[in-house]
Structures are given as structure tokens and as C-alpha cells.
Length: 286
Ligand SMILES: [Cu+2]
Image (cartoon, rainbow, N blue to C red; front, side, top):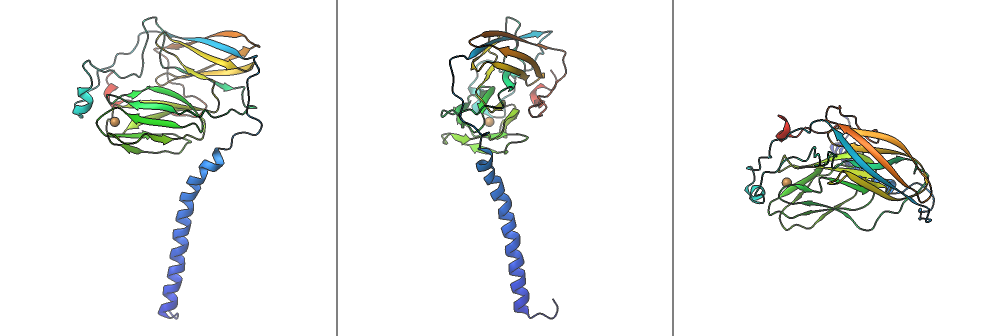
């Protein structure tokens, strides 16, 4: 460009610069555009119940010795520590008094692909209370609102770490508005951390339909309103991973289902989307 007048060189530089800026913006727009593209559910009418639906009544058994965890040290934030009068333990493995395993997420993995399900209007809520996520594990439909609130007088930083959904990382000071977010794609086991409090951990499972449940304090779960059909179920636990089984539901039938997890088993990731369990800093010596 040696022979070009200075003004022309400047003009060329400006055009090149403009092109670069435009392409940079394009990248961001693409990410934003994901929302419109991915919120389009598979074609067909939204499924409605016919009255023939069945129920899965399940239980998650646990065999072996439950691992022991050290109490969480919350000294780093006096506000967190002050909310607890008793030691707080990580919720990575909770074996109930009847020998069952809590917080196992069970969902219909295959068999519903030809159906299109309405997204519930109500959000799923995730609270931060005493610098602990409540609930520790939650299920949500893709494109359903997640509403993150805080009951703490300290700043949290909510940071889900998905593999196939958009990652976000939002600070929530005391008194701030609830944070509303959506996950557009089904993805099992999205770990959520707080950048302020390293012991905080939750897991979000994003499913394309409403047929999922969590094993509770007695290790049972129930999935109601399931259309008759043949399904593959998957049970996912943050420490032990995934286990699947086939089930057939006839019209208006209630089908018992049992999953078994073992203390000695190695982690098997869900094949819905792979995300190995994270090792909590507090629990390395368990
Ligand atoms: Cu926090």
C-alpha cells in the first residue's frame, strides 16, 4: 500500500476494522440466536392426557457402607456460619434410615420421542439458604424458567456448568431480584457452583418432558400420568452415576420399579449428556 495516498490507507483500515467488529458481533448474536432456534420443540401437536395414563412407583435401594463426610467449614463467610447451629454435611451421598438412597433423579430416557410436551408456566425454584442450595438436586423441563432466589444476607454467585447448554455466571447480592434463566437443551447432571462459597453444589437435570422424579427421604419416587408404552428409564446419582432399565406401562397400570446402587460401584456417566461428578474440596478426605 506504499503508493496509496494516506487518506485511502486510512479508509481501507477503517473498512477492515468495521468488518472485524461486525464479525465479532455476529458471534455474539449467534449465541443469543440459540434461544429462538432451540426453543422450537419437535413437530406435532402438544400431547394431552387421554385418561389411560399409568404410574411408576419406584424405590432406590442402596447396598454397602455409606461414605462418611467431614462437616463443611463455613468460616470463610460468617453470615453462612451464623445460620447453622449444627454441623452441615455435604449432600453428595445420603443414605436414608431404611437403607435407600436419596436424591436419585429418575426420568424417562427413551420412548417419548414422538411426543411434544407443553412447557409448564410455573418456574422451578432454587433457593440459597444458609449458603446451601435448596433443593440439592432438581429436575426442570427444557425451556422452563429456573428462578434462583436467595434467603441469605450475603452475595452468592450462581454458576451452572453445562456441557451442551449455554453457561452463565450471575452474581446475586442480598435483596437482589430473583434470577430467571432457561436451559434450552436436555442435559442430565449440570453441576452448579457458587464462586463465593466453594462448598455450595447443586445439580440440575434438564429433561424434554415432565416425566421425572427424585427419590426422597424414604427412597421412593413416583412418576404419574405416563402414557402407555415401552420406555427406558434412567436413574442418575451425582456420586454413582447412571443406571437404566426397561419398563412397559399398560393403560391405567401402576408399575413398581426398583433401582439398586452400591457403595463400591464406579461412576457411570449418563449417556444423555456426559458430565462426571465434581470432587468437592471439602470431601477429598472422605
Ligand atoms: Cu454462595
